[in-house]
Image (cartoon, rainbow, N blue to C red; front, side, top):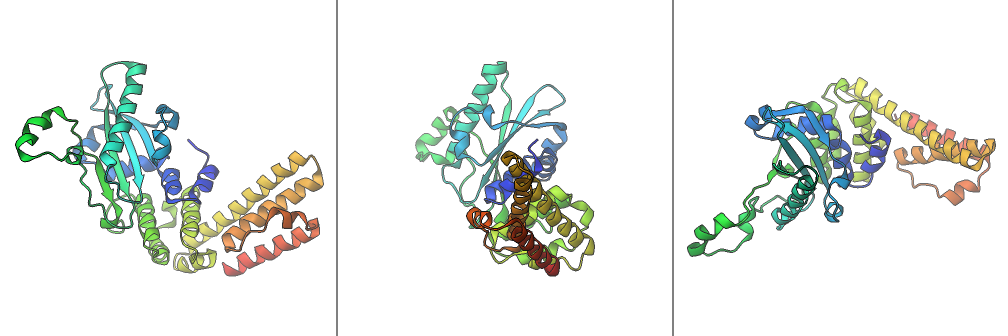
Length: 327
């Protein structure tokens, strides 16, 4: 599994990054699929066997054009394989069934070349975040314009499948689902698109703090601040004030991110091979993380290089006091 710190970096860039950061972790993928696949299918899957497959599993450039995740899992109490293809979409795509078909063919071809027959089933699942609503047919056959007099005769010879769909614009995570972590992730992605993140943290404050491990909370905080320029640490802490334990956890996450910045800075300093350089690298790393959390325009590397070590220490202390005062 990917390093949580790398996932955090990923999540700060795009909605796709947050989607992959969360759902590439098997425990979150399992919780999601259990809530959103048909119950009869859920009962037949051995979820303990779910394994995320690397991007290299599919060799073509298709994987560069998809915000996808691919999992294998055992199904039906036998050695039968099911591949779960999980696709994130921010805009409706009228040719989505065709894109998925191309990907499915690559998956099956790769499997056949490695293992032969029988082929595994592939279940494509589209996660649509919005904005707008998904009004496009989920059936591949609806891409064809067939007159009524030939449709019935031709359809048996055409590929036939339907992709699963969760349209987040029509779904209420606050009132549906049993897994609190997945409900919170979906609610965050929904309200991020609607630019209502303050409402999200007010809602989050009503949930138990122990439901959210630090690595997930870190992803959520970073994603929220990158998604909406109006959201900063002070706003988040204030919104969580009715839940002291969750507020404390959020503050702990901020401290750990600062510590990570110091560690990265020390690594930078070691490359310089000097103790003084190691100290300066640590200070620059900590300053960068503190500026990110305070939503202060980041200092350029040239401007930091121009400061003395004492001036770097002073800036780091001032930023730290500012963060503590806001919290």
